[in-house]
Image 1 (cartoon, rainbow, N blue to C red):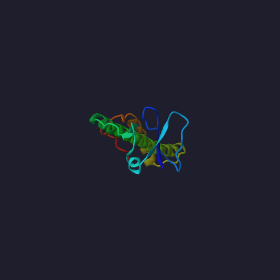
Image 2 (cartoon, one colour):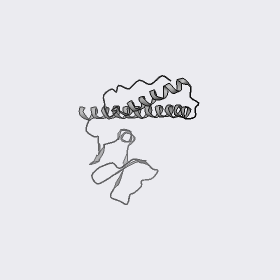
Image 3 (cartoon, rainbow, N blue to C red):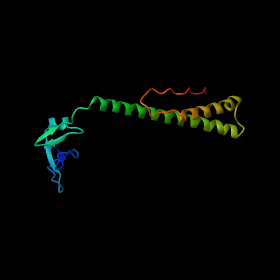
Image 4 (cartoon, rainbow, N blue to C red):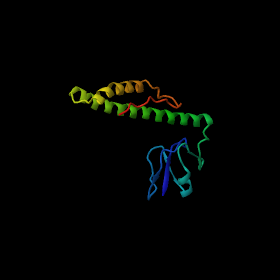
Length: 139
């Protein structure tokens, strides 16, 4: 059997499967759902007067805000990944320099990678616009 616990306002508090009807001791009521209702219910639904009511459709502004939030999250994640990769590269190059084991190419690459990391740190990733990422130094 498929149930949803519903509070006094009709808010669905979750969903659960059970062999038996489970009575709740708090103010929530458990409502048994048909297979069809079980498949259709989702976030934002409420249960009022024996019916499942879907949430209102999202406005164009809400849809755009979700897209923008996704783009900002992607930009922020990419920035963190690029900085982490630069930090890893700088760490190895700096070790080679500190231990007098660096080749001429490694000595020349170290300040380029440091500059790259600083430039990345200045990139504003909190935007839904496309970001102009600074070019990665040659390995």
